Image (tube, rainbow, N blue to C red; front, side, top):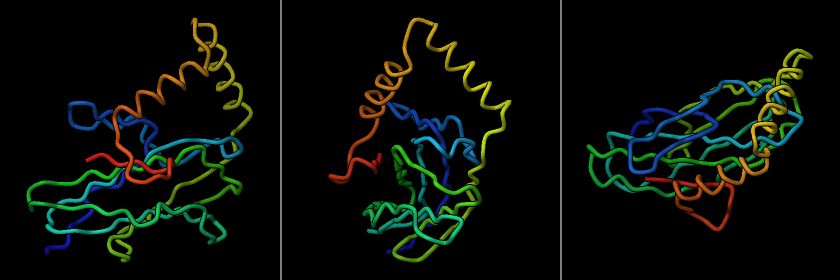
Amino acid sequence: MKKPVLQFSIPCLEIETEDKPPVFSYVFYELPFPNAPVSFYIANGWSNGEGSFTQEIKLIKPSGNLLVSTGKQDFELKSYNIPQLMVNLFRDMMFDEFGDYKVEVYLNDEKVIEYPLTVRQLTPEEIRRVQEIQNRLENQGGTKEKQVQQQTSESKKETKRISSDDEFLISG
C-alpha cells in the first residue's frame, strides 16, 4: 500500500462529468451570500498511490466549531497511475457567521490540507445585481425553480451515491 497525494481540492458550484473528464465551473474562494442556503461541491483528486483509504472533509466555522463533516468515505486506488476523483455535494448549506471558514481534508484521519473559505455580506450594489439577474432569468421563459429542478436531475445522472445520506456524492 502506497499512500496517495492530494493533487487538488476544488470548491465549485457545478461539475460536469458525463462521459468526459470533469469540468469544474464557477470555482470560488468566497461565498457572498451567507443568509440563504447555498449548494456547492468540493472535488478532491487523489493520485500516486495504491490501496484502500478513507477521505473526510470538514467545514470549520470562524469560531472554531464544526459546521459539517462528510464522515469517513472509503476509496480505493487500484493502480499507482490511475487517480481517484472524490466529489462531495454540500446541499443547502447555511452559514450563520461572516468570516473565514476552514475547509479541512483528511486522508486516513490525517489532515493533508486546510484552506480558507470566506463568507462575506453582500454590498447593496451586489444585492441589486443579484435581483436584476433573478428577474432576467424569470423573464426568459423559465422560472428559477424549473432551472434548479433541471440542474438537480442532471446532477443526479452525473454522480452515484456512496451512502444513504443525500448530502454527499462521489464519482470515480
